[in-house]
Amino acid sequence: MKIRLAEAEDSFALSALLTELGYDNTQTFIERRLAQLMDDQTEELLVAVDGNTVLGFLSLHFIPQLALAGDFARVSYFCIAEGERSKGAGQQLLKHAENLAKQRGCDRMEVHCHEHRIKANAFYAREGYSESPRYIIKDLRS
Image 1 (cartoon, rainbow, N blue to C red):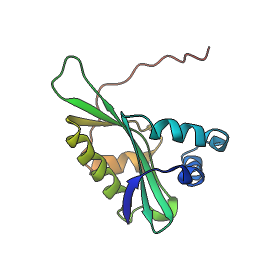
Image 2: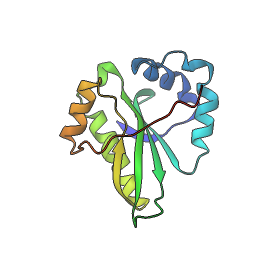
Image 3: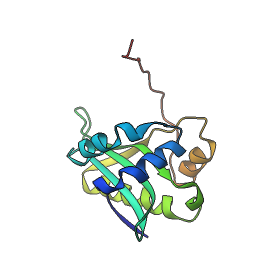
Image 4: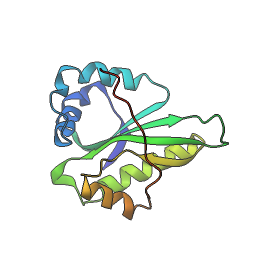
């Protein structure tokens, strides 16, 4: 398995993985969004591949902090293909992201993972992540 930055040719595989996460219909905008993220200096969109097969991906954002010495990194999307789970690819991809965050001056990582994703939350707990105070959000579409 190899970990690399996402490429435009990965759009179909990323869309399929997002469908596994419950995000349907991304194929209509995935190429545009992928290009935007690949061009963003505060983002690393990583893919785990075996040959030409995309096994999974992780979207990592670097966020500078005004009041704290260290920055933090946020995993906003992370998916390993269903048939590839529990084989070590997710652990390797997350460890790679953590190392990138350290290299960029981050002293902590946070992960967005809905509580209904029980297996994913158990994975993060095994990897040393713990819950922190809640987020308060407002839907701006209305």
